[in-house]
Image 1: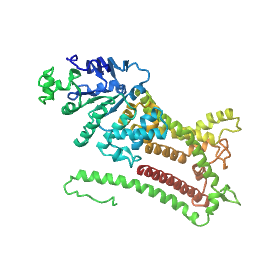
Image 2: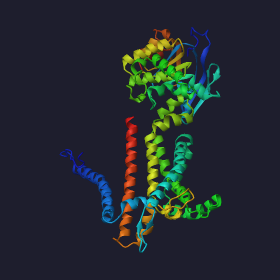
Image 3: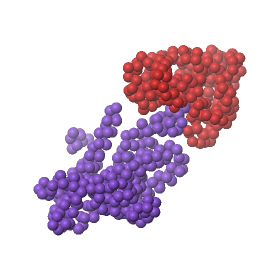
Image 4: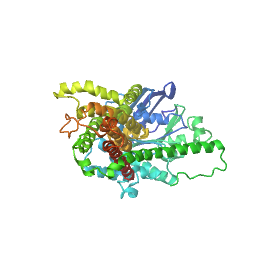
Length: 261
Length: 301
C-alpha cells in the first residue's frame, strides 16, 4: 500500500479515514483502509464491482446505517470530527452532497427538488429559495433547459436531466464535499461531458469524491486517484502516477489498462 | 373495448385456451354480479318508487312511520343524516389514527414489532361486527354514561367509535401498503439531503403515496357506510336528527336489517326498504365515482 507519496500533504485534510473496517453481517466490505482527502481536490476512486467504493461513501455521510446488520470499525473524521459520534447527523449529511448512480428525482416539482434541503434546514423566504434554486440549476448546467417549467415534476425529465437535477439538489445545501457514485451510468456521453465540465468548475469551491467505473473519467478529472479491490485500498496516488507505466502496484496497472476487471 | 375479443389461438394447446376462458369468465362474472344485485334490488323497489312513493317526502321528511295503521309515513331524511353523521364521526376518529399507525408501522418501528403489529391488525379486522356491537352495547355504553354523564350510552358517539375501530384496520393495511410501495431510493435520497425521518415522511412519502392513502380512507369510509350490525346495536336505533355526538340515531342499513324480517313480502313497507337499498347503492356509487375522479385528477397533475 502506498499512501505517502502524496504531493499535497502540506494542506490540512478535510476527511481523515483511519483503519476503516465495514462488515455486512459476516461478509467484509472494507478491510481496514486508511487515507486522507484534501480540500479542493477531486479524488477519483476506481475499482471493480464489490470493491467497497459505494460502502465507503455511505460511511462518510452515515447512510450506511439504513442497511441492517452492518458493523463499522475505525474512524472517519470530517473537519476533524468523527462522523460516527457527531451529535447532529442531519447537519453532517448537509455538509455532504451525494449523487447516486441512478438519478432519484423525488416525486416533487423541479423547484421543490432543489429547494428540499434548504427547506429542511429551515430556509423559508421565497426570495432566498428562488436564488438558491437558480444558482444550483445554473451550476448543474440545467437552468436553461428547465427555467420555464420549474413547476413540472422532476421525474418527468429525461435521465440525463434528472441526473443533473440530483447534482443541483446535492449542491443546494452548499456542501463542503460532493460525492458522486458512478453518476454517468444512466447518462449519455455528451451529458457526461457537460457534467464533467461542471465538476471541473466546482473544484474551486468544494472537495469532490468521484467514484467511477470509467477509469478514463478518473484520468480526465481527478487530481489523485485511489484504486480499491475487494475491500482493500491497493493504492492512492496522484492521477499521473496511477495512470503511468509504473504505478505502485501491478494490480493497478492491470486494472487501469484493462488487463483485468 | 370488446372484452370477449379472441386473440389468435391457433397455436395454443387446449389447456391454455381452457384456462384463458376460465379467467375470462371469472372477470366477466364479477361485473354480472354487480349488475345482477342492482337489478334485483331495483326490481323489488321499483313498483312503489315510480308509483305511490312521494320521493320528495322520502328524501326530506323525518317522519318514519312505516307500521302506523292510519298514517303511514316514509320519510328517510333522519336515516340519511344518521348514516352520514356517524360515518363522518367515525372517519374523524379513524383517519388520524389509521394513517398515523400506518406511518409508524411502515417507517418508525422495528421489523420484529412490525410483524407482530400486522398480525394484531389483521386479527382486529377479522372480529365479526356483531361482536363490536356487543362491546358497544355493554362496555362502551357504560363508559359513555360514566365519562359524559349521559343518560344513555347508546349514541352516535358509541356507534362512531365502533365504526372507527372497524375501519382502522382497513385504513392501516392499505395505507401501509401504499407507503411501502414508495421506493426506498426516495427515502435514502431525502435522508442524504439532511432531512430528519419526520421530514422524509411529510415532505416525500405522504405526497408520493397520496393516491394509496386516499384509497385507504375511502375504503374505510365505505366500510362505515355499509356497516349494519354494530351501528344497529350501539347507536340507540332511534329515528332522530342528531344534535350532537351524544344523540341517538338510526342508519339506513340498520333500518333494513331491523325491519325487513317483519314485513310482508311485496307490500309498501317492503318496497320502501328496497328503495333504501337503492339509495345506499347510489351513495356508494357516488363515493367511488368521486374517488376515481379525485385519483385521476391527482394523476394528471
